Length: 137
Length: 156
Image (cartoon, rainbow over all chains, first blue to last red; front, side, top):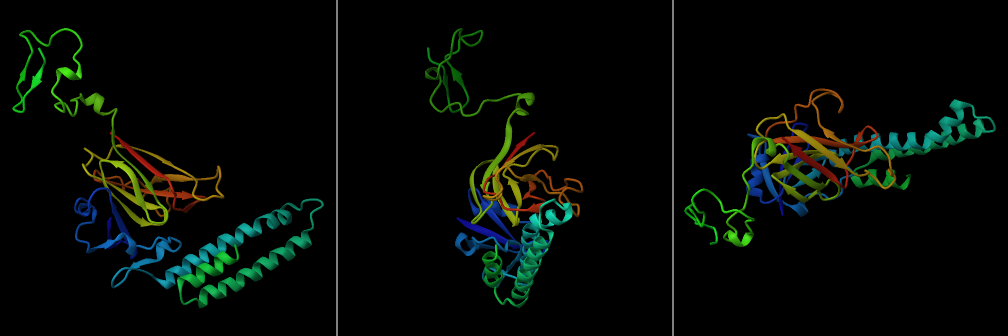
């Protein structure tokens, strides 16, 4: 089934998925907003950078700057997750736990994510950003 | 004598004084003549006015629905449910359900709620509830996230 796409209030793309027919769903396009009817296959199925979708000349495209913002957000989340067990050792001064080793592990994580940060900044495609983040998960 | 409902709206087979005693079976009524029972205002409030079950991941798709003309995918975990027939007002009661947002979220935090106009998703008034649509947010651990099962029902 077809989809209706239009530029939303954030500059991104909203995609209308009809239950029955596109004709019935046209009422759901905000008043006065330009829209296009596209084939479902023209909508990316990979939503990794969903909030970076923008209206292109013929179909949905990715805004690379927005992809980088999303990539950096994910990088920070992943880094925070990896820090967690070591943060706990250091913050709680757990007896028997090696705080020095924990700090060394934290530094390795910092170094790894500093490299990923550089890859994201230098990326020329969304796939490069996604690969850098997924390889290091 | 069988009861017959004619296309013009006339009913035959009922004796003077009302319906005959006893049970009226479907055999007494012409096939397909009754499609929707008329109910009172109080009973109408017991009915679900609209519902939708959709997949918010990958290629977003509607599994089944009632009185929903479409859903709008506005972004990660951000959807609008559009009604076919509008609600009488915006004082309806939405009921939500969802599943885990990832395989590693077993028993973890997951939400599906009304999108508000505040700066954070938990702040502000729910002004995204209108008679024609309801905008919802799915999330987990304070972030908007796509969910495989997004379930919305509307009572009014």
